[in-house]
Image (cartoon, rainbow, N blue to C red; front, side, top):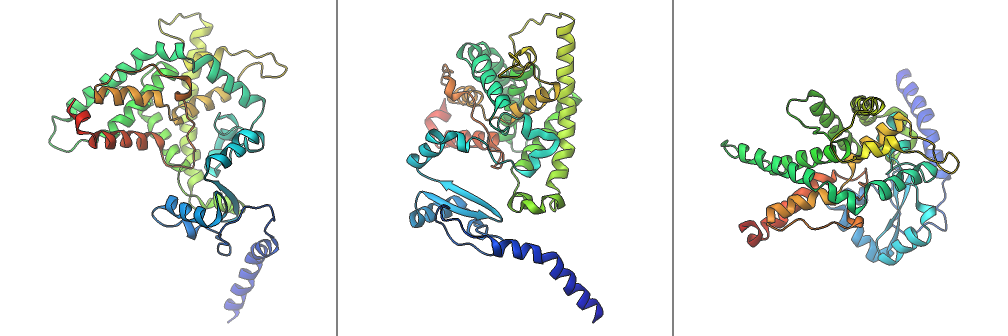
Length: 363
């Protein structure tokens, strides 16, 4: 009996602050309408089905295009109309410029250096200018056509070799490896998945685990006050793999900086790493130089981008169409880190479209 009373007392002590916190919270009059939700978990159970996007569509019909939800302890606004999205991201864009950072991406201060997660300010504007002015211009994209073609040819050779085996071919996997290698060539001028390279394979495995952890549903994101517990171990896994990826990325950066200091001339187009290292700001309204840690973070952030120009050559080779010139606005679309892994989803979509188009498959 004594043990039972002690247990009850400890439960009351532990959970009283949580209950008081939720009981004292009042719903703001300015918060958009939405389902009331359940105590503590909020609207998590309303989206627990196999197709939450359909659940959101049904909620839109009942509550309108701007929907207020509580994902655990976090208030969330869902915008599902073009007019409302324009108000949010055009007329009031500065108010919503910062992106919510999932707990796993706070490891090693990754969120402070990533262009997709960094808070709006001087550093973010510098990275944006580097991408849009120095890297993602039509001339620079066209200069890399041979690199993209080489990676596509390499993938086709892999598929041809794999087709000689009796087991089924996981085409999506080979396309994913090709896209990863393509990013490595364009950003670092090297194959990240060279079969003879131990570092390349290690880097790929670490990045894959990071992307998986970033897209995993995490209790620490729904209940920030519990993040220090890391109940699912997501932060620990992310931290372990991010340190591996940072170590390898740092070796790439140091090797390049060493070559540049020695005046070694490379017979290749300038890549993204060259642009980052050579950047010089005015020191007043922008940074003077990017630190090595910041460059490492940006290098890691680049493979996490969904770059449609990389998918297009593969799709065009498989469908028999020539590779078109790519407009700037189609070059880079940031991956929402909490979503599922974009590259594999995109390639699977391409394969699905081809299977649904027999005339394209025939080519």
